[in-house]
Image 1 (tube, rainbow, N blue to C red):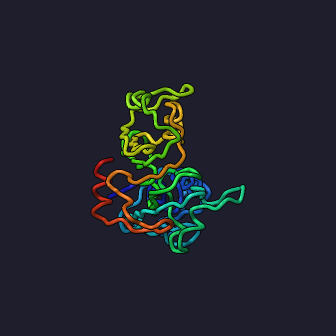
Image 2 (tube, rainbow, N blue to C red; image 1 turned 45 degrees about the vertical axis):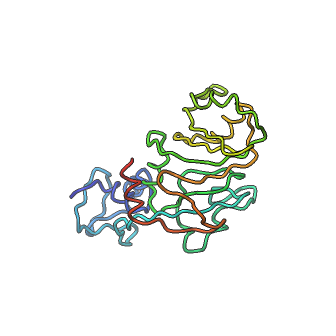
Image 3 (cartoon, one colour; image 1 turned 90 degrees about the horizontal axis):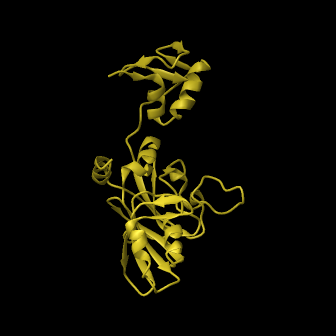
Amino acid sequence: MSVRIAKFIADSGFASRRAAEELIVAGRVSVNGDTITTPVFFVEDGDRVCIDGNILSGRAQTELYMFNKPLNTMTTTRDPNGRRTIYDCLPPECRGLKYVGRLDYKTTGLLLLTNDGALARKLTLPSSNIPRTYIATVNCNDFSKLDCARRGITVDGVKYAPMKIDEIGDNDLQVTITEGKKNEVRIVLRSCGCPVRKLHRVSFGNIVLGNLAVGKIKKVSQKTIDELIKTL
């Protein structure tokens, strides 16, 4: 099967498609020994693709991991303010993984990591409609305004899709969302008079955090990955 050279490079995980096109135009890519200078080029199975003379392998098998993100850690590779990041908590062999979406500094719980950048992007698209479930501990025990969030609400001009919210304790709510907008749970609950004190994600699609210890990482089975991909 033939694919565009830039897609082949992107699928290998070496660079994004745009960055791959820049490498091609710069004359740094060759196929079967011939330098390629246009992205309008197709490669076939068995072709030898090199970047700067180094052979580029095809995409490795997709791997997905669940990580129990600790409190007060940034979901980023490096924080300009010097705060601790998730990569400071990961073992060295996992520091090349890409995070799937973000959890904010104060939010704990399930964060997915993968070696597949394309999958990471697909999993975080609002159109994927993947449910994410959180346990929110709030500074309030009057839940009378939560029906606004259950129906869908607009806060500061931003529309938020309906949330599934269950009361599971005096100050605890189980909240399921599908959009994943930045700080969505905190913003919406605050607008309903229930400011969040603690936020902990317990599931992402069919992947459940369970009893994984804080700061620990665990590989997700191929069967579970396949089931998740089928929902996209």
